[in-house]
Amino acid sequence: MPERQLINKHVLNRHEIPFGVKDYLPPDSYKIKEIEDIVLDTFKQWGYSYVITPLLEYLPVYNNGDSGFDDDELVKVIERETGKTMVLRADFTPQLARIASSKIRSEKVIKLSYSGIVVKHYKDKGKKEIYQAGIELMNSAGIEADAEIIKIAVQILKKIGIQGFVISLSHAGFINTVLANLALKDNTRTIIDFLIQKDYSSIDDVKGLSREQRKILKLLFDLYGNPDDVLLKAKNTFKDRKYVFFINELRRITRIVEEFDANNKFILDLREMHSVDYHTGAVFQIFIPGYGEEIVNGGRYDGFLKKYGYDVPATGFGINLSALLNRIP
Image (cartoon, rainbow, N blue to C red):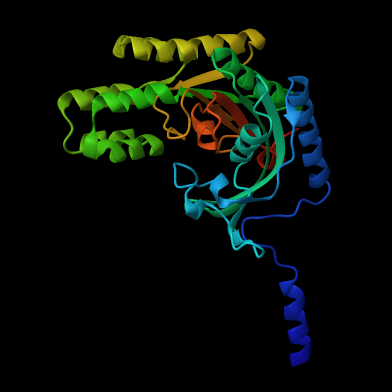
C-alpha cells in the first residue's frame, strides 16, 4: 500500500501546472485559433507584417534601470551559458521596439503585428498567462494614426461577432498637464492613486490642498461620459491653449472613427490614469458586455522607443484573445 501511494503521488506531480497558466483543449483550442486567424488576417489587410518573437528575452529589454517593468512583475530565469538574467515574455511592445530599433529602422513607417502568450505578475493577482495579439505602428505621428488603430480594433470585434462594446477614450497629455499645473507636490501620489482607483469621494479628505486645487480636481473628476458633454465641460473649465489642443485631438479622433463606422459607442474619460507614465497621447480601452476588464488596451507612447536608440513616435494596441474565447456567439 505505501508503495502504491508513492507512485500515485509521483503521477499527480506530473499532472500539475503552474499557478496562473492553463491548457486549451478542444473545442476551445480550435476556437481560439479561429479568433486568432480573424485577428491576424485583419492586421494583414491593414498592412501590418506579422513577426514571431522569442519566449525569452534578456532583462534589459524590459527593465534597464529606467521606467520599464518593475522587477516584481517579471518571471525570471538565469541563462546557464552566460549567467545573464532572462525573463519570460511579459509584453510584446518591448520586443517589437527591440526589433524595430535594431533590424528594420530604415523603413519609413513600421507596421508590425504579433500574437502569442505573455506571462507576468500582476499586483494582488499573482502570476497570469494571457493569450493576446496586437499591432505596433511606429514612426507615425498624428491623429490619423491614433484613429487607425481604433478602427482596426473595432473591425476585429465586429468580425468576431462581439456586440455592444464600449470604447473608452482618454488622453495622457491632458491629465499629465493638469496634474503638473496643479503643483500638488507631496499630494501627487495620493491624488494619482485616487484617480487610478476611481475614488473621487476621498478628495475632501486630502490635507494640504488649496481651495483652487480642490476645485480643479473636483471638476476633473467630473470629466467622464458622453463625448460631446465631456468635451464641452472640459473646454469651459480648462481654457488654456494646451488643454484645448488635447481636447480637440480627442474630438477629431472620435469623428474619424465614427466616419469609418457610425455604430460605435464612445465614452470619454479625461480623468483616466491608466499607464500614464507610459502613454503620451490618446489612449483607449474597449469593454465588452459580461467582462469586467478591458478586452482591448492601447494608445500612443511617443518616447518609449528612445530607450532602444530609436526616437520615433509610436502607437498600438493589444487584444486579449483568452478573454474573448467564451464571450463570442
